[in-house]
Every structure is written in C-alpha cells, then in structure tokens.
Image (tube, rainbow, N blue to C red; front, side, top):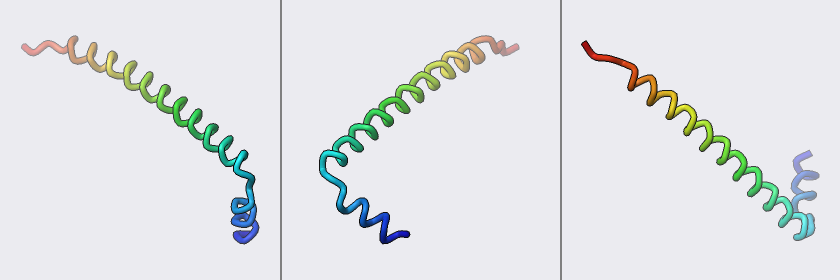
Length: 56
C-alpha cells in the first residue's frame, strides 16, 4: 500500500500540486480567521470578567 501511495504522489502532474498547495493555503487562512475570532471573543469575555471582580 505504501508503494502505491508514494507512486501516486511521485507522478502527480505539477498542475495538481499547485492546486493542492492553493487549497492548503485557503484552508490554513480559514483556520487562522477562526482562531483570531475565537481569541478576540474570549479575550473580551475574560476582560469583562476581570473588570467585574471587586477587591474588598
């Protein structure tokens, strides 16, 4: 099975390699956008939580 997988990757046309690279770039950028959105939302929530704490 491993030989077949390597054989398929080795003889893939360069146009498909470029398309695959572009797909991975799009996927990585979408993941980055989701992470940034989650951090921004959690940051706002945590900031509000810390601002609501009152020290006697």
